Image (cartoon, rainbow, N blue to C red; front, side, top):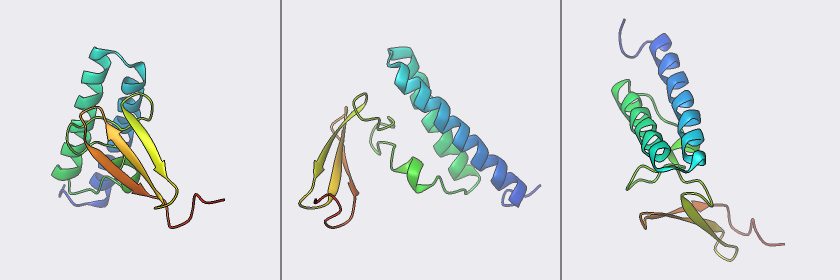
Length: 110
């Protein structure tokens, strides 16, 4: 079966989604062993996506630290600062890497 068939692509997407769920559960447990396992699940997600040429998806890729591979879970693995003036949220991972999520101009103003 070719790598780019619809069936292979669907199975790869399902596995990526399941690994994302499992890694979220592991990071929420907040112990050293579970975090290590959670990082392993994130690494497997990225490997499956690149091997089968399947896009991970914006929801999942935005929640992964590009430097260390942690899931960005507010209050557990990252801190969040919201700038209402500029319209973005700043996520700072434990490793120090920062990423921005743009919320739209004026979306936070009341």
